[in-house]
Length: 351
Image (cartoon, rainbow, N blue to C red; front, side, top):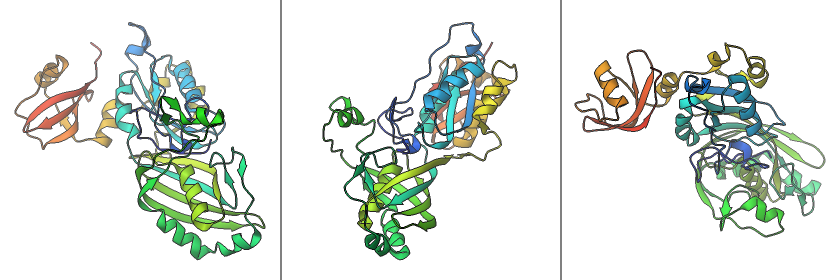
């Protein structure tokens, strides 16, 4: 589905997809991610590690992309940090090998999307895949939704919001996914969630006799549903609305235009090739774009590899801090307080 619950949700991993683990596709939402499968000791799984930025095409689930990455890299230990619905396109962040431990920290990052919202009709799923609800808005009602009124409604949906997620989502209600309950004919009412839409800019407005299409760019916190944003815009204007197109263009500091971002075709073409691991961004480079960096001495690196704390650090309190060794490898993520560094997540190194 075309949605984006960006995820931050219940589990720090990745998230909803309509068919498998539906998410508000727009951004993955979060309820579930597809956890990486561990490889066997001594396999190539033990040496491949890094982040893969993939521009997902429409028509594939996020798990489909994970499966193709596993084949291309020759490892089962691949996971993703935020689902995109099959109809959505754009940036999907994958982790391979020990770097999958970074995915937890990627799930909660802010996201950016470009989207098209169609005004004039509500649907059961708040996107184009659902059934129509009620009558289509009249020509007079659509004409009354002037550009100025659209701008005012968009402004009202910008900032901190108490957003009610789309009913067809992976949120659990009494232990069962909301989308399963909806498909079973139950009426589902979800509690609102506090989200932040820091940017909701209208790029273009296109009018026909029976609808109004609004192209927009949205910057939002993890957990925001772009489908719900489309629904609420239509409600505010009194004409109904749903999402018809969605593309994720940014996850935290990573963008779909980054040099490191590859197409799925390029990933598949590299499958089985010894150069495939070169498509991965090294864990240390990824961590350095997200956190403060502590360059460790050989002695400090050895202590961390044994699970010890580091004392006497001349670095401001922060968490996480990326501990990077003399060879430029990510050793651990630390919590640093009063000069003492405690391991949050360790990253095993090859001997």
